[in-house]
Length: 233
Image (cartoon, rainbow, N blue to C red; front, side, top):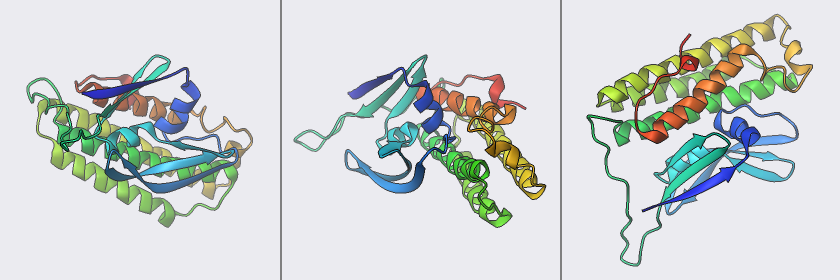
């Protein structure tokens, strides 16, 4: 059995933690090791005004669970803790005829997390006027590229293949957005994004990336392929 937790009326938190863009108000982002039900993994933790927040998709991934966005609710499903005999009820492998393979879903969630780890520090640096270099951005890009390659290697169903194309589109969109911000930084026009806390978030390209990130997370959690215009150029 999986335990399901519903977090109601958190649209701001969803935007903050599910797509890697944060308001930059007294925040500190770190990558930390989390241990959930004995399962260890790394996830981005953001500290804002004395409170710590973790990416719900990363939390679900580490715990071999799932997360689904349903209107104003975030539904997190986590496997039960081991019983006294040491066994755990886990969700069976999905049928390769109708949905995703578990290996691909895990790799895809990892790639989404890497894309957020690329986008969030860059957005924060641009918003606050911090120095940004191509080498610094390249390290995040390389990690995301490796994650995309791992997702490609995990493809084993037709649904996996279709979803991988959307994941690739999101990778390319983040890359184009990243290049645009680097160019803006070189031309000193990046200052336009620091004039308002919402300037970067309201950028159409940023909004498209955020929307696609939401969609991919929800689709993967549902284990069935769907399509959405936000994940297409």
